[in-house]
Image (cartoon, rainbow, N blue to C red; front, side, top):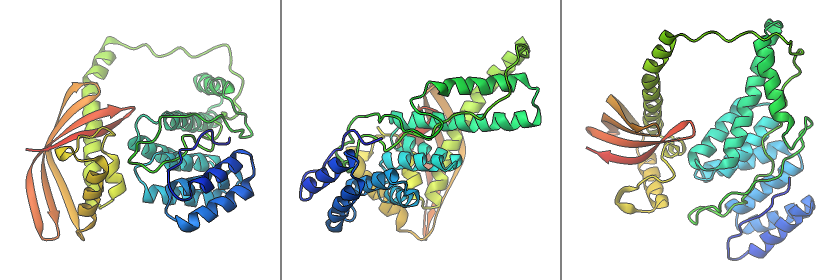
Amino acid sequence: MLIGALLLSAGAGADELQDATQLFKQGQQTQALNKVNNYLANKPKDAQGRFLKGLIFTEQNKTAEAIKIFSDLTQDYPELPEPYNNLAVLYASQGQYDKAKSALEMAIRTHPSYATAHENLGDIYAKMASQAYDRALQLDSSNTTTQTKLAMIQDLFSDKPYNKTGAQRSPATRPAVEAARPALPMTTAKAAAPMAAPAAPPVTTTVKAPAVTTAKAVAKAEAEAPSAADQAVQDTVEGWAAAWSSKNVKKYLSYYAADFKTPDGESRASWAATRKDRISRPKHIEVKLSRLAVDFTDSTHATVRFHQNYLANNFKAAGGKTLLMVKSGSSWFIQEERAN
């Protein structure tokens, strides 16, 4: 689908980029590409122009070129969710669902309220589930429960506004990108690839009855639930420390919530730039955590306390730290960071 709106930054070249956008919306891809190339000749790092060029390549079925553009944008502007989402769209069109899933998870980490990425991630999960059910039926074609599940996925996507040949869905707008971010199109080139399920054997009228859940099983599940929640939060904190240790700045920053309370109230952009400099400067960083303790305020808020040992080149530091965590979707993020 063509983009529905484009947020243009003011300044030199804005008219040229506006012209390119209009040509793109009119289906004149070659002319639009020429305009964008002229614009980027003077502003080669401009996120908006590069994003539009990626959309043009997508429409021209130049998938490899489009992937390169969106991948580069995620490296240069890791705080923007749209390039991750469009990468996922392209990966899904090639059947690379694991890569699509990873890209969408990064889009959501960057912008937890990005509804388009959440919907696309749901489509990816459903597609992967349909493949798993299909493999299960190949091994046991008489499994009526699996047949029913697969049929449910088929029914779910039969109402989607796209067909099995890959027709594009209408773009969905979202709130304007914050001023600190480069202006980008508010919509994606396409939504995720169609999630039509593979053909399944006809569902028989006899469906296997679900197993009876005993009181003992319920009690056991309830007892295990807190430990599972604890583990999810601990995995997030350990992943954050691992990204820090590996000096993966983009991944490290993705663990912080969109409303993260920065120290001394500085801007998010200024804080992120400082963290990038401090992580990139040392040749070696090692962060070790111990004595992790998780306390839940409610189902979406938790406090994590631990002892942190930090080593960078010849500098060492150790002490207690507290992270206030918030859950968005299925992921946990750091909302506030305190040194004890």
